[in-house]
Length: 280
Image 1: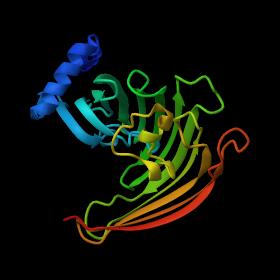
Image 2 (image 1 turned 180 degrees about the vertical axis):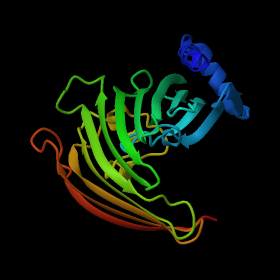
Image 3 (image 1 turned 60 degrees about the vertical axis):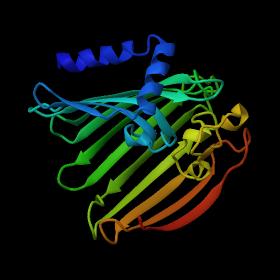
Image 4 (image 1 turned 90 degrees about the vertical axis):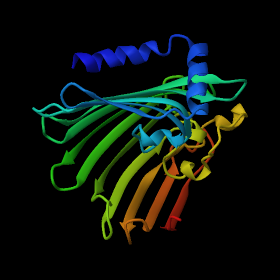
């Protein structure tokens, strides 16, 4: 535990000198430094890796954000107590190219399988305001994984701390997932409700329904295009079936109405998608 807390402090000190951090990150990415994995006393693992073009969602959890690519460094600390409980801490520093290289920061801390009950809690914070747009997103997720049933229940709340529009700077989602698609013949289904204000999440990082349709793979330079394009509440049903271990059939059904139809742009929609994914 002492080492776990010490790594939290070490990561926070990493952000002290932005110019130095920017130079070091750029050097690591340019030279493709290999990942470093180290065992910590007991059941802990330390993972340090320069990352490029992988989405934030590969290391940080949310159904509404973390869809944009991450270019930076990633530190992951995972631990497991014999008595129950799996604390973890993920943090990173990332670069953007607007007006020269700038450095932003992200972190997530949580506990899985609390007291061997299947309950979990996660908190994340990402700072976009220093590099691209007026967004500092704070998110809390709590849920419960039913042991040996492959059933998960979850609820989350998100707020943009950089916005003073209290009726537009929040987002919530609640839902359940059934099954896990890992091998041929497996089926998973996720049903959730989402409500997202127009000032809650930057468009380039949106991962929720509808706004994800307009996602971009490169961070935009025009700040006017970074404003949220959300303002909806509705339901999403997603299923994934593995025809083979690699060939996937995905179904997505979404329907939503405007969250605040009188205040911002109307964005009500209904949508169905069927995707066959065949890797080459």
